[in-house]
Length: 264
Image 1: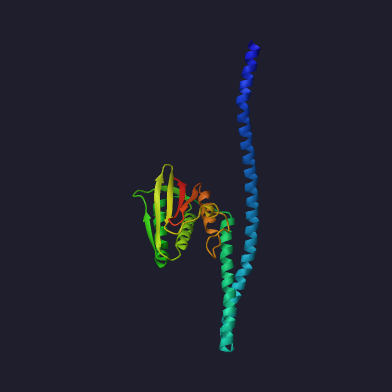
Image 2: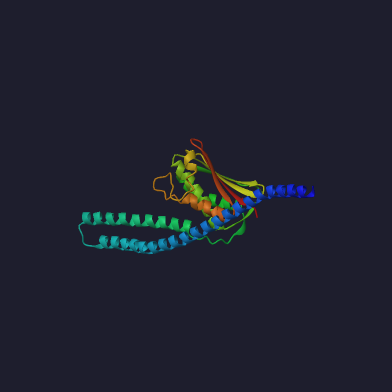
């Protein structure tokens, strides 16, 4: 009888332990795969960053020489129409060099390692500061900027420059979405338990459901001429701080980006 009871007990224990062991094994494999993936991404990021630097240096030299060539053409004893035609061609070359330099800069910022020196900051004060900084651009684009922050400080540990850059990327994206047709851009700081949320809300055309899944992928842009790295860089910066960046949008009604950061 005791043998039967022991057998039943062992069977029950095995039945309970087996799913737990399977779950543990699955989690261990997932963690191992994630570690290998992170290592591969780090290696790719290091390699591509080095390659981008190798391209950026001679590109800067090309831009400098284009500027010198423009100055020489203007000073040369050439027919005025011929000189203007040659200068316009070189200026086109210079603009393309500058554009490629900007793309490389965005790429290096996205792919390179971020060196964080986070400090405790009042998020409301940082949001007000970046609002003051960007307000002239909003006015130029016929966008009304509104900033709402709590009356008391809400502290979070962030790298001030990187946080402001992530927020500025979202604001630039919002203003460009409204495409100088006018609208409103609101920045709100909201306490949310052990997190602080920064909401970036615009009254633009909104983002389709399909595009909402894609906009945080590198080189995906809904705007002609965009590099498609602003939003991925913003999300990466926020995630490096242990936070999250999400989007909610409805076509014809606008878009809301939500930054969520752990409070200090």
